[in-house]
Image 1 (cartoon, rainbow, N blue to C red):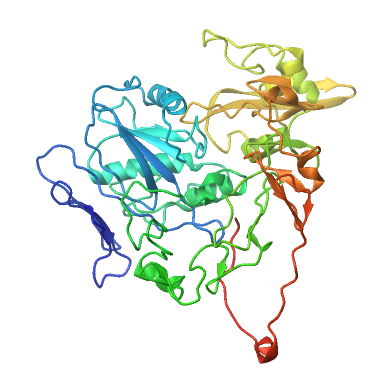
Image 2 (image 1 turned 180 degrees about the vertical axis):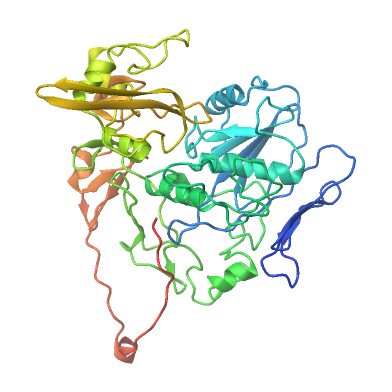
Amino acid sequence: MGGEHCYYHGRLRGVPGSWVALSTCHGLRGMFSDGNFSYGIDALSCPPPLPPQVRRGQRTVQTETKYIELMVVNDHDLFLIVILNTRIVLVAMETWSSQNMVSVGNDPLLTLRDFMKYRKESIKERSDATHLFSGRTFQSSRSGTAYIGGICSLTRGGGVNEYGNVGPMAITLCQSLGQNIGMMWNKERPTAGDCRCPDPWLGCIMEDTGYYLPRKFSRCSVDEYLRFLQQGGGSCLFNKPSKLLDSPECGNGFVEVGEECDCGSHVECARSGGACCKKCTLTHDAMCSNGLCCRGCRYELRGVTCREVTNDCDVPETCPGDSSQCPHNVHKLDGYMCEAGQGRCFGGRCKTRDGQCRGLWGHNSADRFCYEKLNSEGTEKGNCGRDSSGQGWVQCNKQDVLCGFLLCTNMSAKPRFGDLQGDLTSLTIYHQNRYLDCRGGHAVLEDGSDLGYVEDGTPCGPNMMCLDRRCLPVPTFNLSTCPGTSICSHHGTCSNEVRCICDADYTGKDCSVYDPIPDPTPPEGPEKYKVLFSSYPSAQGK
């Protein structure tokens, strides 16, 4: 399946479960699999190859395809770069042909931090993740690193990767993107056992030990990705990109200039949309061929829910009635109350100390007195972070104690995520005629993040939220507000795009216009007595 370029992907003729990804840009290079083994094609002696695009099949939380809009940056040490083809959509590429725009050193984590700062300040192209491919060999046991769960974030949605041969480089990118979408390395952990891989011969992509060209994710990795989405992470992945780096091509699944529709490859069209779309042209009387708001070649009625909520900080999306596409996936604006007033929405997730303790250690947050007692001392067992020397600990100010070290009750000996650094805090305090259990620990991820602290956005008092281990009034966050004398005229929800998502029967920028959705009218005559039977795949979550 190739257009007028030199990247091709497809299958081996007559071999079910096979795939092929090839490039003819500078000689023949690529990868193919017969369903059991993967093989690489490369020149014996030549400059670093220009990579093919690898295509990844859809993975859904429900039935909706996700799209990782990827931008690739090539450093000066790697002037030629392989554009890897996985059903990741490459939307932009930048090459530092004369000099590096950031310091690319031996430490991949320091390079990543500098690169993410450069991305925020200098890269105008918007993408879900931006990855740097470098010709430098990092002083690390792995060939790259990325921020865990950072997808969709301007400051954490990215990674750095070493250049290598096509196959190993593809796996390194898969691992880095896996980290971006919430996957951990498949180490032994209390809640997931040893994450046995379904492919013991080739291994799995997020294995902590090296295998050559693994092709599968373990059950742990899949569960972590689904949990990440269901908790409000990765909201940008539901939005189909509007532009690609590749030239337009009928059959790639994206409606581009000169096309009325595009249901994808022959196999994809046979599965969905082929009856409404032929050679990227709509069939007679068809309004659409694909999309969450397209059914039977017609637009869904206005108000039909096309994307359910995943958590208390999400908002449902409904069909507009004049388009086949579900509106952009958005969530509530930061600062909304959630979980019956116990938490605050921040970045699409409901932040509570109880929720953080349960997720990391298995039990609820400790009593407030534990925070007041320990976090004001400024020791490893209770603090508001490292001091400027990186050796000591900062004492929390009295008003900030609920934003420092995370203290829980009756917690497990090991964190569910990350590696335990230092000793566990374990203290029993007698206070007001009862014993209080105060426990905590530093759970450090590979990207340097310490999960042992209260997260930003967590409530720390009436109309107060945590930010950088300080407890601040909500107004200091400078949260934007939606139109209307009251928020969305009390008939909608203000989204993270600072736009009102109106309740059913209301419309307008501030949801002030009453516009009831009419009940569907059955057709007149014999047609209305017809009974149609249809089957749809069951939903599996958002």
